[in-house]
Image (cartoon, rainbow, N blue to C red; front, side, top):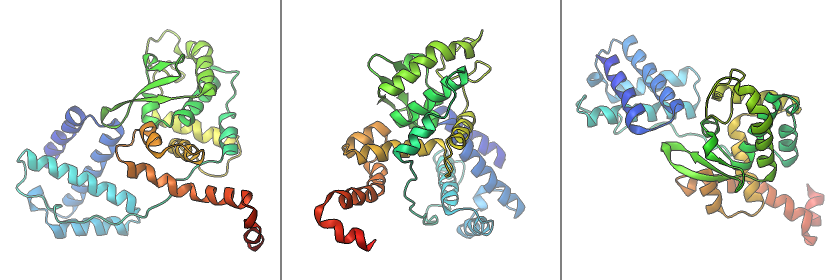
Length: 303
């Protein structure tokens, strides 16, 4: 019975909510973990779940050493699950209605410097089709600030090299226009003309970025490409696709871009999601001040 409710919930996410496959997978995994916990504790009905049951569940997650951010995501998944069940009248009560999730640590986004980003982008061997693809991928992730889920779903008709614009389908299937500079447009042109045609082979697909079998590239493959290029570039930090997005936003604000413009380019629904990058740039502002202001010499000496 409980597993059947989960199947209905997953179908609801896939067909009605229009959320990304990655989010569906994460929410499904989180709810399955909760249902496994219930089974282990002899609870065979969701109506038998109480506030104390949830507190025991959260305590078990904490004992396993799971990060607060991951626990908060699991709580969000359960809220969504119970919200669906209540709307469909499949359960009588929602035990999460009065439960607060753990407070998450507010971490500032990690980003690359201009020099580090240049080394990363120049890492691929552009004498090979895969290298042309990887260079275009890196250029576009940095130039347009795309999510990895957005770049893998790009189709050929979403790209306009002439105007250097990209039609992007973001979270919740929201459409927006992203921009790219001349280097990204040139890297993309070279890939489309000389790299993609060799990767495509006899396969027919509208996907922009392809794997070696001529199929649409997967998120995991993009993650692997970035990790490999970061190692080749000699970068010591762990680099993953979202760091490219963080770097895009941070460098724009360092260059005095308007916060609202950056919000639109990132596809953020709330300005507060973009404002976190203003805190990141404070250190850059301080460095610029110390380097430029004539009365900052005494402070330089103290450091």
